[in-house]
Each structure stands twice: as C-alpha cells, then as structure tokens.
Image 1 (cartoon, rainbow, N blue to C red):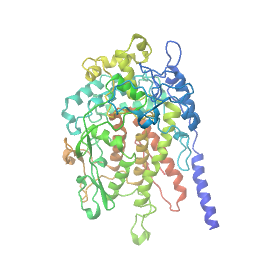
Image 2 (cartoon, one colour):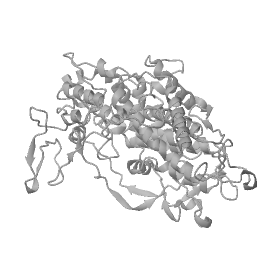
Image 3 (cartoon, rainbow, N blue to C red):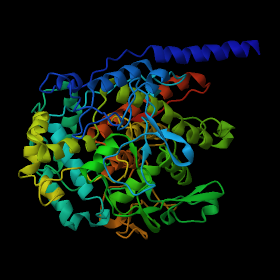
Image 4 (tube, rainbow, N blue to C red):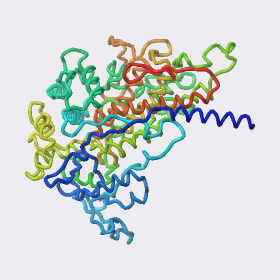
Length: 597
C-alpha cells in the first residue's frame, strides 16, 4: 500500500502542477463604479448592483457608504462583516443593526417600511444577498475561482447597452408568443423592425462603438453572425438566439428540452417527452404560468430593490405542457436544478446510443478490449462528470459578479429609465448617462410606446415577482454552468453525430403552439441537428431564458458561457493525469474552433 500511496500523491501533485502552470489573469471592470458622480461629486453607483441596500424614494442609495462597506465585506469574505451591513428599507439603529419590533405571538421581527401597500398578513419579509463569499472559496479541482476572467461589461452609456436593453424590453413584450407562430406574429415583426433601428445592430463591423477593445471581439462576432443571412440586421432565424455553432439551425428550443428517451426495453417514444431515470421517469412538460408581469409600479419596483422577498407570488394554470412559449422557458429556468437540463441531455444521448468521442477507450469489441466502460469511460462516469463542473462554475462566476464587475441588473436600468421619463429635474440630472438610451427608445425604435401607450412607464415587465436574484448581473450563473456542462458533453460524445430515432431517421421536433404535443418538423428541409449544435442550443436556451425573464442581458449569456467553458477545460486537463489509460478528447469551442485534451 505504501507504493500505492506514493503514486496517488504523485498523481495529485501532477494535477496541481497542471493548474499552477496556467498563466495568471488580470481582472478588469468597465470603470462605471468609480466614474459616475452626482452633482456634489459623490459616487452615485447608478450603473452598479445595489439591490437589498437601503434606497431613497427616488431609487438612489440613501448612503454611498453603505455600498462601499458592502464592497469591503465582499473583499474580506468575513461573515461578521456581512452581518454588520445595512440591508432593506430601514429604519436602522446607529450601530448598523436592524431595528426590531414585536410581531405575531410577541416574536421579534425586523421593522420594515415598504412603499407598496400589501394586504394584511402578506407583507414581504426581507431577502438577503446570495452567496457573496463563494468567489473567495478554494477548490481542489479545476481552475481557481479567481484564475479565470471575463472582459468588462458594456458601460451604462454605451450603444451596446442600448441594444441589450432594447432586446430585454422586447423579449418581455414577446414573452407569450408561441415559438411555432413567430414567422407570422405581428409582435415578433415589430420587435425585429424596432431592434434593426438601433445603432448597435446597424453599425459597420469596423466601428468601435464604445471604445472598448476588450469588448470588441465578442460583440462584433455576434454582429457578424447576425448579418450572415444578408442585409437584414435582425433576421428571424437569429432573433433572440445564441451565436455558438448550431444555435440558429432548426427549432428555437433544443431537442434536449423537448424529447425523451426510450426507457427500459424502448417502452416509450422519444416524442412522448419522458426521460427514463432508471426504472422511473420524468416528464419534459412544465407548469403553465399565468400571463402576469410584475414590478409594474414604482412602489413595487422600489420595494424589490430594497430587498422585499416577494418570491412565490406568481400564479399557474392547471396542468403541464411542452414548452411552447418563452414564458414556459422562463418557468423552467426559474426553478431548474441548474445542471438539470444537461443531465437530461446526457441521459437522452445515452438512450440514443450516441457514440463517444473517438479518442476515448473501450470502444472496440469486447473480444478485443476485454472490458467495458462503466466506472471509468462509461455511463456512470459521464453522468457524474457533467454535474461535477457545476459548482466550480458557480464559484468562478461568483468571483466575477461580486469581486470584479458588480453590474446593475436590467430591472435597475429600467428603473432609471422610468425616472428619466417621470422623475424631477434634479433626479434626471443625476442620470445624464442614459440620455441616448432615452432618445433611442422614445424615437424611431418605438420601444417606449410599445411598453406603454403614454410612453411613460418604462419599468421592465418582469416574469418573476421578486425580479432578479440578489446578486449582480455579470456573469450569469445559469450561463456559466451551461457553458461548463455542455463543454463536458461535447468532449465526451461525438459532437458531429446527428440526433436520430432508433431506426436512424434524423429528428427535429417542435412544440405545438398549445404545448399539447410535439410536432415532427424534420421534413421542412433544415440541416441535420447535431450533438454539438443541440448542446450549444440547450445551453443558449437556458442562459437566454434568463433574459426572457428580464433578469439578465445578452452579454451575460455570451461571456459567461465562455467562462464556463474555461472551467470545464480546466477540470478535464487536471483529471487526465489521474487515469492509467491513454486517451484524448476533442472539444469543440464556442467560436467554432476546437482543442484536444
């Protein structure tokens, strides 16, 4: 056993050396945090995430010191520093602790003064920040949370943010249009026409719109992809879609969010939408959320910014259905188990007997290999590995969210846009950075009138009653986990393989407009749907699904996907020395290139 222990230690050291050999990174944010100043010269933090901190009636921080103390506590990661922060609407005692009052049964509760009038007994509780210290934790596998990075987010006064907010507004307005009806729907047509008027989509690809070379590569790549179909700046087959290979081919939703697998003895059709989990099964159909949007008054908006916990107040219709509308996708990403879609995708691919990457072992006949893959290079191995990267991705993106960027959520930008239309002259003067966004939305884009006939209520119609999660926008947790998990799956399976029925027929299904069934659309003449394309698409669906909810921007999806990709590649690189078998994996990346592990 001593020899085994020595070898085990060496393998762990080899993996650690792989991690240590990666070049260090430098983190950069867009500078808005220190750049934006009010009339007195004090920082406004108007472009940064301030949710849960105390805000005044106009939506500004009651005290900039609250923000600086919040940032300081993020830097230390000490729970004692977090507990000393001001949180919620107040009032507060002088020592920074919440003032308490007696509630039902003479039990003490925080004294909270909300702006919105709630029915008796339905007043919201206080909602705290989520996992502020996760970006400072260490891990024994994969890149350290601080060793991977993202480029600066678009600045609040950039044309890119104008375009991103235009998209998020239109996604809210198109939330209930069935995917099957997009080609003929008038609202979808208005969205395309409106977005095409925004400078970011029309600009020549050589323009440096906001002067940011760090942001240039991904944003221009996106515009080039949008323009590949001709002169239309926003073609319908690219509308609200991702830019990774395959995401613009076929139905909007990935097959992995619709179909099932055959189950034991192929007892079910994949179009039944049932995924076998051993001898039990789960259904791809989702609860049908009521067509209700939230945070449509300033008082409701302000309460949520002050930390009102209004979760669970959305309504649902009876029954379940296949995801037929963006709101169905929003419901999925509201309650998913984060790596859920990718574990399901793995089970579907295993059920289809999709071939593994040619570089993996144990794929010859049993009479040659004399062993089969199981605990290593088999089903249980990939089912574990695809979920193993999720928590590492979350730690990496938490470091970006809290310790680097602290980007304002779309609902917050919309709140400032409401104030640009309705606030006092003094309030508007503190938000001059949004003048060009206001001009764009009130002008030919017609976004303002589409939101409200009086062109005044520019609050973002939110799908979730609680609005966004209580952590900054950039990067996105869902998108980072998506990038990590699908990178693992693309490494493991033959990414060029075409999804097919048991008889070899290529598949392509779309939900009917009412969500009651899946419709076979494979005969429409589209290109075959590949493992790579549909894995990229399921990642994009989940990530952009959060945009459909109103809680993220497009760059949150794109840059976070790339961050998750880095995490997954790091895990694969560090695990490779732990195996005795000689093997390789060819991994296709977000930009169409590939690397070999």
